[in-house]
Length: 309
Length: 171
Image 1 (cartoon, rainbow over the protein chains, first blue to last red):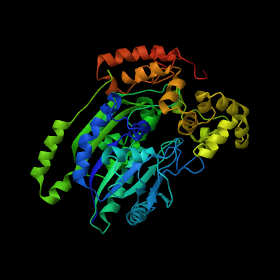
Image 2: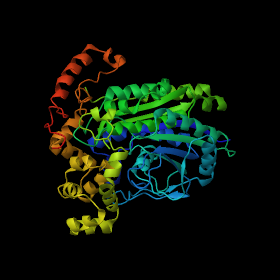
Image 3: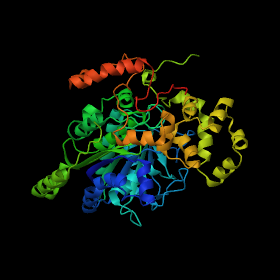
Image 4: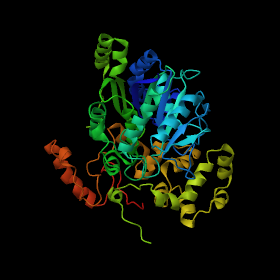
């Protein structure tokens, strides 16, 4: 049986991708951002998922204003990087997992989530930047990916509650897949940022920190945040954080927070990152002691960089 | 038919890209999408006014694009993820465009971001009627003090922090 072992949330700032592509990661400005993901890459190398489900949003790459699906599932065998206006990112083609994706589609649609099926789709920085942050820059990505694209560009995006419930349905689908697969689910985007209009540059670290705290401890509380509050408190584009709730909905109610990182800024955006492990992963393997050790180590590594006042 | 008032119109310095904006801005955004292809970027740069004729833009929309008036493009239905492709065609990043839209110099904007970004205090509400929920307000006295500052700032209709030059929405 397939199972979700952990959830990862990460911002997907396009400038992070550019810093990687232009080899600027050692510059002090970028070092501050990338250093926060060193432990995460180690964690991911140990976790070795068989499949990653990546919840992200398309930024006018695969979907223009002609067709705007609220939830779209990538069922293709591969997803090439899109040309976003400056040429496609020099990253490997993302391989899909069509069998698992089709299974998820069937299960989730019958669970009353009306997904759009994408058998041909390009992917942009929204998906590839978090892949780089967690997997580095290998010649081939280490595992296949099932992309879940969420509309957060055209208002209104799906509600936080709807997203959380979709996560629940995805989890149910995965747990009914017969093959023994270890799955990690990514929620991407956020944290507070506004990149449009005279209010651009808005950052709200207090909101972000509370969001991270509750993501671990009380995600149901987050499902009640109305869109107006995201936009007012965390910036017009901060509404992307609803996507993190799909990831969280796919996890157990109680999770171990094994790592967290936060820094301001990357370009216009507050960068937030968290890794949450399902308890069951440790229990199933009879390694409670090991899990506690991991947690302590992670706690030591935990950083919370607050640059704003 | 008059447009129904939306609660998010109270957020200062912000144009929410909703269904109506999307309808209005369809030609701007589809023009911007065309710039994802290298050949189109070249054709546009070779003769901008001529290239724009094929997109059924209104005269205001055409003018906003030619003048690179990014705030005006938002008001006329453009969306930042689309207009950023125009920015990219000019060799400009999201951060460059953000600075332009706030009326800041590139250096001032970069400095503001490095110092932690634009504070939400004073930037929540145009009307000044919005009060943070009790859980936020109860946290500290400092928060409520800065909130009262915020109200007076918001009523002066300046969406930007004093650090960046203030600018009207139509700018």
